[in-house]
Length: 67
Image (tube, rainbow, N blue to C red):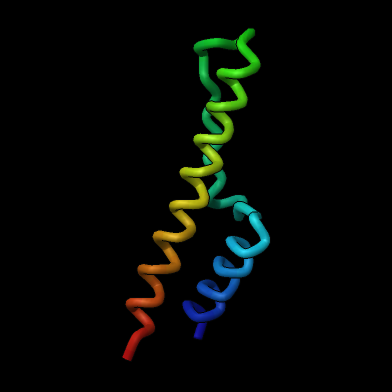
């Protein structure tokens, strides 16, 4: 039951475009500190990776829950 609730939570987060705190990748780049375009792309890439991790977990848990 706990796993089912976790899957439901992750699905809701994905639907609402929310990254759970535990899956939020926060990695600072030491390159391009003064380059706003680079920094924005860096942050967008990390956000995309975080979403992919959430999707991966949902798929994994759904396979575990399948009869």
